[in-house]
Length: 288
Image 1 (cartoon, rainbow, N blue to C red):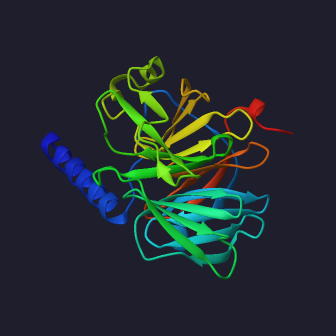
Image 2 (cartoon, rainbow, N blue to C red):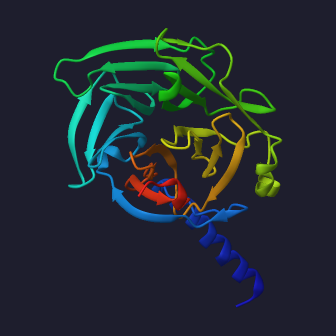
């Protein structure tokens, strides 16, 4: 077989593989500069209805509240039985990106910046309120976390806001309004991003979720596009950047902590099953 024929055969196989990945919803794993293997302590595969799981919030030792991209439903997932225990409908279909629990109340973030407040979310009779961030509809909101100490919700924007930084805003739970100035700014010229090498650009981080560590007050910012986890101290200074391997975290969209400080990350299925992973980054941050 001559060299030209070999090249043609290789090209055909490459084209077939590309078509397969495109139509089957599977993308080949990419290697990112600085990627590390993360310790996964436990995993739960989600039922098909949570293939596009987009946000999680810890309830108790056996339960996690989940939302998914397309339906206005809070799913109560039992980690002991690996089953959905309850479904709570709070509105119409939409693009729902995150959930935060504040006592008995739930707050769900829609990608256009509308917040759904579900009071006593586990009761049969629900009271539901809506609040808008009042900001430009061009922003794609994806992360939400309860800041208990300051009685507010932290909200993150995925897409580009300016060329130098990415803001995290605060929604005041007393006034039910978004504070006009960002609570934190992630600056793109921070030395922590140097690990990304040639991957470094104006879209250095595109947050898919945000969470606050229950003991340290550190702010965890997750990204799904190029899987990574950025850790800020309570004042917003970057402490650490974890770059994930895509084979472990295909599309990480959800982030939460349990009462002991254990970290949970959820991944959308991208053509397969979604999952929730209990992971260990630093054993010192977990209460025994």
